[in-house]
Image 1 (cartoon, rainbow, N blue to C red):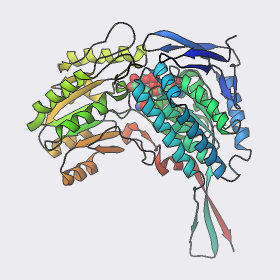
Image 2: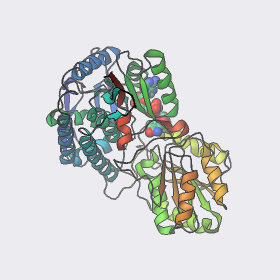
Image 3: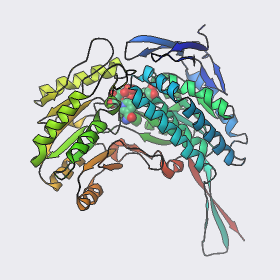
Image 4: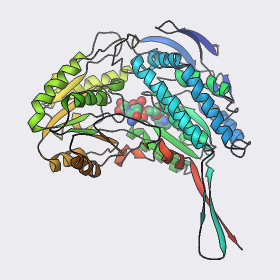
Length: 492
Ligand code: NAD
């Protein structure tokens, strides 16, 4: 008997009504079995609210709603309609920026400034998708015979989408934006630790005029709700963002059920390379943005720093000072750069890696400890004198921990940078344009940032090489992952 909406007052004084139900057919509904789960505030470890937990039967109902919407005129009417509702949704997101950012900081623990940035990116991305909606083009193939052959690009149908807790609202937009622009309908599962912002945004979807059943949100746990999506016979595609281990499992489940299409945006252990000719001051800011932004809970985090030997001491000293000056703590306090880690599990994992780093013989330059004893705060951490085969250099930590090592030549650093199972992103800092192009070409990564880091744009595709994933999000490439080609060959 949990109410379908509860009043919540954010630490910044804003009060709002938080939906707690599943969002199906443009309505908030209790789960069939009436189960609920608690949502915690990672900054205080206190309970924020309970929300309804969906199970297999709820996923079935959501899929039926999505299927019905798909078979309506959603993808056969003038496609500019889809553009219009996405533009409207982007406007509504922007109008509610402070509230949405507050919900995100409360639920995820991220600094309010970061959360505001996320919501801005959400609005931009939805707008970009809105613009694509009426520009999905097929083609005519000149086959040189008497046939007339043309290729249509058609939506896939009901898409299952499973998102993580590090960027709850941004990942919601990266998933729903291209799916809706291309005429699909979706059943989306939020992460169990951060379900609030997508539920609130569902209200905005109704206000924007998105028809019933086009977007359905099923809050719940990976092993039940996530599995139900990945294995569902009527879902034609699953798009997942999260860990490589879970991505691998989802791909197997998808293959064993109905061979649904799969796109995966997975983990990383991205190298960030600093050459001696880099601008040190700017580079230090980029390194900070690369590793401590969003408390280090970023798949593309620049977590392996390689510094050319001639500037190593100077750069490390400047970086250490900057890291120690970062304000860590209450995400709602102005000036805080790094808030709380999202869960006890993440806190334990991060502190576990600090112990591993020490026992492997790396030098702890700064940080390496929890801040306070309430809330999941960790000091920005630097390990130096690392060896390439250490676990702290090889494994994704997903927290504010960076490893630093020296190199002398381009060949040496390219080899070290590429020695990873992952290939999501990489950074280069240099003022030598020839060297930049050469190294960028040789790095095995889906994105290479030069003299910047964690720098995203709606028109630029993002995704991984190697075990960092399959497919791309954003850019025109994202639309490819939500359409299928149909060849029509007519004998004249
Ligand atoms: P996860 O990959 O298990 O969870 C991500 C999402 O997948 C969540 O919504 C979760 O409920 C769902 N999920 C989990 N098991 C599932 C299953 N069997 N079937 C379908 N869906 C399932 O990640 P986690 O356990 O929350 O975090 C573990 C580690 O993963 C982190 O410490 C971090 O290293 C990594 N991670 C990476 C990213 C990224 O963006 N690359 C995001 C989150 C976590």
